[in-house]
Length: 338
Picture (cartoon, helix red, strand yellow):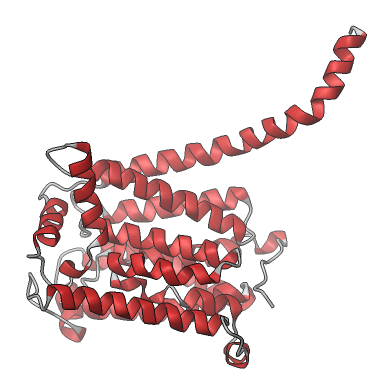
């Protein structure tokens, strides 16, 4: 090799290889996220026009309780339709963007929790599979535009908390509650990260974690009540069932139990088995969110609507199960802030 060529190779070696390594490291995650988003989008069929009917009901102010008060996602679809000059909302494109955000943010969240990149990609695959089982022509879940956006907000909140930007949770709650009332659990992310309860109660600083969580709940309540006051009371579109009546009704509907277990699989059991040696953050978040979320959904919704469980599955249950898989490898745990 010529001396000048050898010198050029030595000078450029350190500057090109890191870039090449970073690029190679991104190719697989991008490919997996793209394929997962494409597959879920392909299964997000809406043969009965439920998404369009829901959007028109919200925009015209004729939606029923609780649909009328979940305004953000449907107004976003309406505004995009108007801005693009289309005759119908871009639901397919919106679903792909929602999936790309969920899988990208989920991957970043799992890596931030200390999981390996390969395990994080496995988590993306798990989420895509679980979602796909609840959608499509035979799936019991509707197009669920607001439920997917709800998961996006949970992932954004989780990454903000893990990065030490707790205060951004307060303004985030404005959008999250305008999208769906199930965002009420978002402040528990702050409590789980900075817990336990004794430490939270002892911290009386201005802007303490407990204070931020309480302020976030207050802001969420103002937005929630404001939207309800603006639209006023709305009758439910379908007959109301709650509690034992809802459970018995679900059990009496074909395939509801099968779709419920398809949506959650054995992952909650795997998460429970991982709790004893799990990261304190995930352990606390599990008890703050999962039991009550499942109880509310089983009490007030059809059993087979698996997309209802997407936020806790994404934020808590999947990472707990994946953490259990890595336990034998001795991977270092991510510790909450002191």
